[in-house]
Length: 544
Image 1 (spheres, one colour):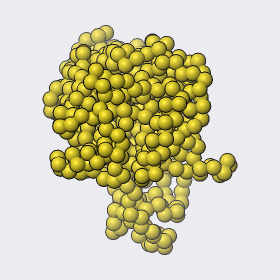
Image 2: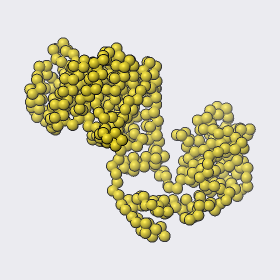
Image 3: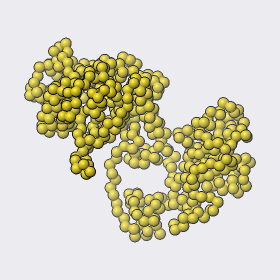
Image 4: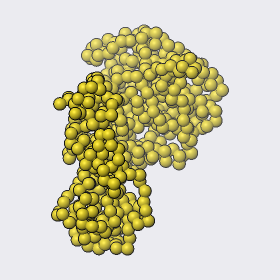
């Protein structure tokens, strides 16, 4: 018998489908469709396999499980609505033969479950037709049922079959009766994972609700949703390594975007005072529980906003979002400490925290002194850091080591060193330190939001970009090349603007209790399996 890997190799012959299926599935295919290898005509002339979906007047009204549930209050135990014929379709979750004359089906349709009762006494056909129709239906099949709504003597709402049962699409493989435990199989066969693991569908449905809520939130505040280029000849707006490609029609190298920030700010310059975008970003970096090369963000830019307005908007957005999903402002998923989204959120001064840990001031160090002293501090505290040694990279490492892990409850990290924020306005605090007018929101040790007052001085922006060029020359491939076109746009005048970005995938993780980012993605990136090649002769020999 062929190995698992060999059986799943696509071989282009007329037997490829059957090679990739276990013998039980092949037998099931023939029993349901009545087809032979070289015969495409069903043996059962009264039943067409894989029929088109259509309804006749005799099949009554098409109904969904959700619509059927509205009839629950109109019927009492044992009552049947003999005057109403309805038709419903769904996947057979379970089949229970009470006797040759009575069969129960549990049907799942769009995440909703309903019971189907097939009784020979109500079936408008011969006993043989009733038996054959039930015989053809197996667990996992997609089936069309026509009957009348009613309740059993125990009060369970369902459909009682009268007109017929038609298999629309048979399930040729055996669906496991318990949840998949192997993560490799779960995410490589996501369709199967969703069939047997209700939580997988719940997470994706919750993700949709979160995105819908965010759109309503911004639309109600007169923001305009826009789309900016995903593929561009330049990247910027963040420090990350991009994916590179080549456009043959234009004879130019291009990259997938790492952030939409610079484009969105140009729209504000153009007179669109409130804009937002929900979309994919791509960063050619590592994969772990919190990072995926492809991820979804929401960014908004608001003219005449400031840091305090950003903090207030963030608190309002998240607290109301949590309440809409969980019907309270506390997320308690019985995994770790409950997370409270009651406002106001906690705040931490990053500069104060760093200076307390380091034992020296960060106010007046120049670039060369900063690097040497910060590297010495990393050695003293056994904090590992890799080259290139730039001020921004070292400070980011220190913050992720000392500050971020303490942020379990929603916490704003404010007053970052200016070296970490090349696109943010700067200010001088009461201690004479030059800081970025910026905050990050952390929850459960994860960065959820990054926001700041946007730098709108074109001269200062060019200076900041020059520093990024120096970092890049030192080997920091995450430092983006300068976008001089953006600097030119700034010369037309960017009004005082507040900018904000949220990682939607991480928000979904927190609100659903998912421990890995791939849980909240419909189809996460997976490493390819080793390929195995088989020639057609080997295939046909095994089939025979």
